[in-house]
Length: 188
Image (cartoon, rainbow, N blue to C red; front, side, top):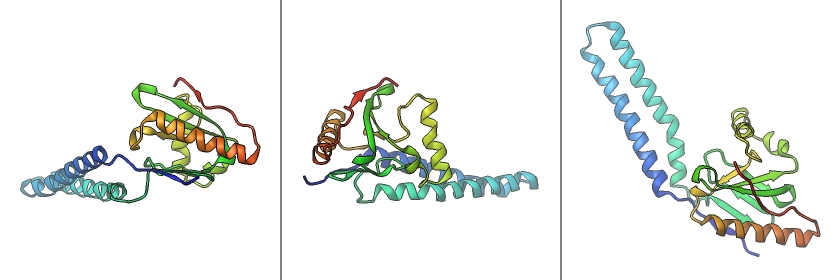
């Protein structure tokens, strides 16, 4: 079987990123230029500090926009596993042999696919501390796994994605003669 590459929906994300960057840069420029006529040195210092802070925030957000022009697919599914690049906090590669179950949910009109792993700590250890903390927040919301794929970011219908993942996961288990749990729907 060949691999399936699913691209990201870039239109809405690009618009949001451009609007955010434009707003932050405009506010930073406004703070830097409007503080010049202030007679109070504290107010002038505040304007300069706020302008500089906003421009630093814009520089921090810049890499997220660079992802929008990247040719990397949002999700790659092949005979070895799946590689998720669909969100800011990417899951990366997950081997079929490490997947215990795949659960689907649609909380608040957002279709999500959760990858339940035999040993999630193995994957969490390879992440930065901030990414580990963010991944663990799913427990508080009742998500079945810290590894979720938001289907709304991908150029594929939810049902079609479930079908493709089920097919590849099933093929892996047939090749390896290992039993597997079925994909089940969960309420979140």
